[in-house]
Length: 213
Length: 92
Image 1 (cartoon, each protein chain N blue to C red):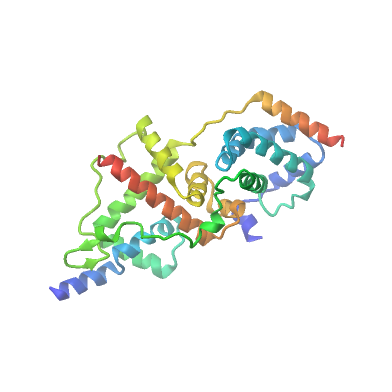
Image 2 (image 1 turned 90 degrees about the horizontal axis):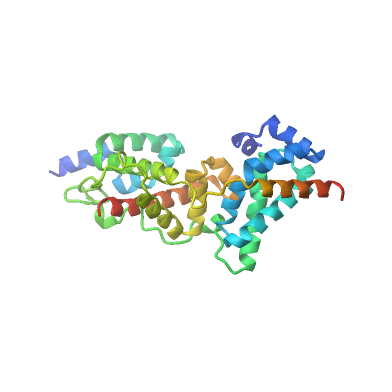
């Protein structure tokens, strides 16, 4: 119940779901317009581009056939994306692709900390304290995101552990809320924030190297 | 000198290493009241961590501005074929 409140289930969703269940083509068209491109982007995180559209097609079929099972405990959006994630993961598994599965990325994998401990060695305060600020040679606050920076960021994202990339793309690019991401990926709030933190810290480090180059 | 070090450590409340791990939770407003107070005290006295936090914010902004790896525009033909699919499912 609290999840539904957090992700903002609205009467609008309920009404739209009822119209879909009643065979309202306009309602379906509206839904496709709103979510199809996002679903295709999401599917491409799991499977090859050529397969991604099949996954989205299967998602829409499942939505059409299952709309009367939409109970309004989540938003229509998270319900639909949840269906996509299930289908995409199964398909990726079948094709032997590494599945970004956030639930598996919780405590696994060594974490050396946000910053190498050797950089955190203050002459008086000792280990764990900055000796000096980690300044960047170029001020990113002033720099517009040019094509080169964009390429650096996209490379950094694709190099992330898949579970971290999954969360960071949804949160920081697609602009989803934390509760939405938890719901669709089936992970806890703590896990979501841990993955997001590690992803952001890793991308920050790549930008640091790039801006200091 | 030891007194100064102890006083500084007390003023900082937590180490920089610990503060760094709390930064996303800090930005998310997800810290416990006690951790939030420690973080506040730390940032008030630690310029390097304040700089780092600003860089983390800049990273978030840059990633957001980078946008998705692939921009997919809505294909009207695709929408029509999905609506056809919807229609055919109604008659099953």
